[in-house]
Image 1 (cartoon, rainbow, N blue to C red):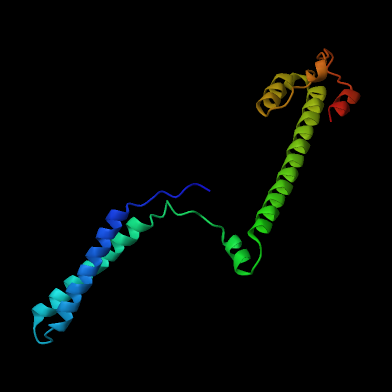
Image 2 (tube, one colour):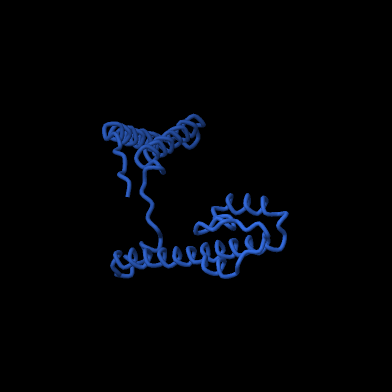
Amino acid sequence: MAPVDRVDHNALEQQLKDIIQDLYQIMVQVSTYDAAGRSSREVLITEIKTLSDSLHTLHNSASPPNNLPSVPPELIDYVEHGRNPDIYTREFVELVRRGNQVMRGKLNAFGTFRDILAENITTAMPELRDDVVQVVEATGGVPPGKRNGEQPQQNGNASNHASLSAV
């Protein structure tokens, strides 16, 4: 987990002092409030808005959202239910590893399918050989006829044994 940046404690202390001063001003305005006078009401509204702004400023400077560490809600649930967070980590790692193995299997299967399809296309339609080579190379494969040191056959007939051994 990335370290959380430190907040300037002197600035926070000053903001807290400002909030206390705002609360004191509100207390004074409430104790001298005149329900009949319009100016008392406006001054009290202004003091409450000032307090709200001060609290908002303190909140923003004390906990900027980009500095707070992100904890998955599932991990919080584990801890709340009395389970060890290491179990969550182990299960998460196993789940990711399983997903990676499945994805690797799919990638290998599609790669094998690509190679077999390319081999069969070049066998059936030799005029498309250059296009097939370009597509196979662009997708990270080895073009037909270049696997395991094979030499491309001029007649366009690739042996099925060679294509199966590449699988």
